[in-house]
Amino acid sequence: DAQVFGDAWVFGNARVFGNARVSGDAQVFGDAQVFGDAQVFGDAWVFGNARVFGDAWVFGNARVSGNAQVFGNARVFGNAWVSGNARVSGDTQVFGDARVFGNAWVSGNARVFGDAQVSGNARVSGNARVSGDAQVFGDAWVSGDKDYAYAHGFGSCNRTTTFFRLKDGDVGVRCGCFYGTLAQFRDKVCETHGETKKAQEYLMLADLMEIRFKN
Image 1 (cartoon, rainbow, N blue to C red):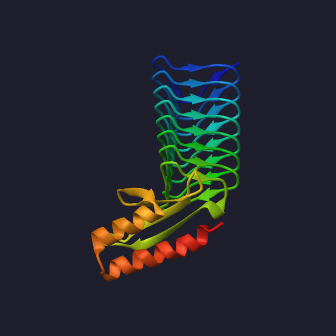
Image 2: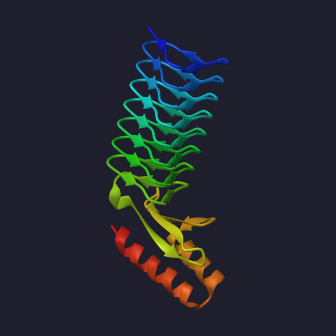
């Protein structure tokens, strides 16, 4: 039977059932559901229409909200936040200050941590490790560490530029507000920075990543 104990709160239209456990200072509220053998503990919050089930654990200061689902043997902890229509499943771990949102799906043995973000329609699976300030976005299709790379310290804001395999096999780029293919990135660099040193750095980086992702 489901158990709620300690200083945990379950309120609103939230439901905890099956063999699920909610403990510590955890809160489950809104229309959220925690069921199966899932556990929510620590200072974690599960709210909105979120679902945590299977053998999943949500703990620490983690937040699961919106229509997000965390299931399988997944672990969401630290200050991580899973929201929107995101799915976190399998043996995945999402932790640190990581964010998974939009329609993103993280599965397999993947790890998303640090300040990393996985969003849009991105898929991260297999043994992939997405970390640091990386942003895996849009139609990204990352099934291992060879499917993404990032470089920090370029541009006027010393921002992080992330490169990743797309579903169609092309290479996608996320740089500040820009998202597009590697070819579109080159065009945008030339349009924005002309023939400056900054442009040369970005274009050299694009050449490097072209080699990096070449089949």
